[in-house]
Length: 222
Ligand SMILES: NC(=O)C1=CN([C@@H]2O[C@H](COP(=O)(O)OP(=O)(O)OC[C@H]3O[C@@H](n4cnc5c(N)ncnc54)[C@H](OP(=O)(O)O)[C@@H]3O)[C@@H](O)[C@H]2O)[C@H](O)CC1
Ligand SMILES: [K+]
Image (tube, rainbow, N blue to C red; front, side):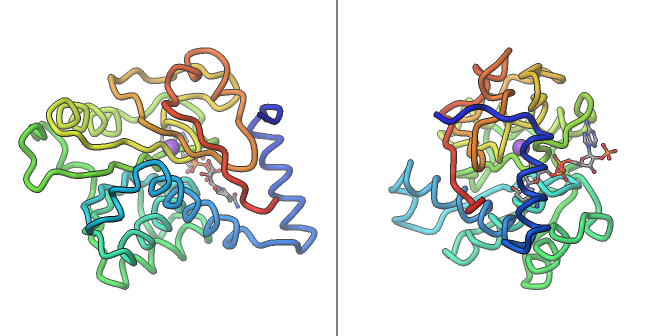
């Protein structure tokens, strides 16, 4: 596995490629989101047999933008997709906003994450086959907001009763990408983390190493 990067090193690699005209941020986000979907079908090929249901937990930044790319892609496969957005589409960074608007304008369901509050997800009907954690990636700077922690807690009840999957985009939200420190604790380990270009320090150090599930590193052409 190639050397682990800090979030600053990753941003520098991305920005150098963008500044050099090799790729745009939007293209990188598109590749990242599609790489997550590819990793899902490579890991659980039976999910390809029939359209399923996905819950996308999207945050306010570009990690959330990846989540909307994934939402659009899974809808292309005929999946029933609902995005639970901690954030405001209008305030998202430009690349993320493009993908969020594409989802919303195509009739995609975007809900606030409040529905999870106190909701007993153990008997959710229909159950969600795959949860995508796209709340926060390498831009996490502090412990998670309480409503985000509560959403994760509700889903952890459901996961105890349903055999659904949790996939973390880039890194499990709540883990510091530069140290592996869990800035917020919740009882939900992902089945898989899909990161881009190279592992980050937070995937290999501290508690982060135990809170990845299967770590998949996908090339996004950098
Ligand atoms: N071209 C690219 O940059 C690509 C990026 N990829 C994906 O993008 C994320 C990194 O995106 P970024 O927007 O830098 O960061 P995040 O989405 O992780 O989060 C930043 C936003 O979240 C707010 N934030 C941070 N911590 C918290 C918190 N604990 N509570 C509430 N809000 C929080 C932050 O706000 P600030 O107040 O801190 O400014 C931002 O609004 C990367 O991980 C990839 O998934 C693509 O994959 C490749 C292209
Ligand atoms: K994430």
